[in-house]
Image (cartoon, rainbow, N blue to C red):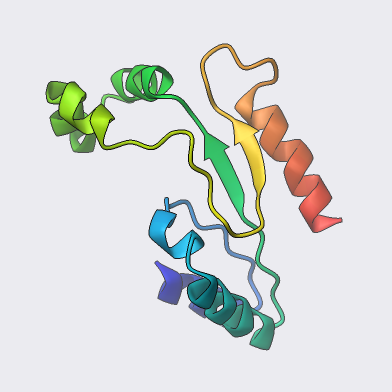
Length: 119
């Protein structure tokens, strides 16, 4: 995924990666390398952390009906016990709230924060 993003950056095209990168975002060395690589290509790195609780995650998966979620839903107790929904990355980031019942929709929160990042 990163190599594809780097290919886009080298071609002068912005890239947005949608992946957890949980361990990586908690590694100052990884973030430093990523920031340096992107800076060398004239790009800035911005991290948006999507906050969600286990109940909301389950509902999103049920609605999505993706094959990749089948094991998680069939083994929800085991899967949910592996989640740390109170943790956010140590890297600088902007958070958006994806919990069910959030006061502002995920789309509106993300749009607002992206405007701040890109300004």
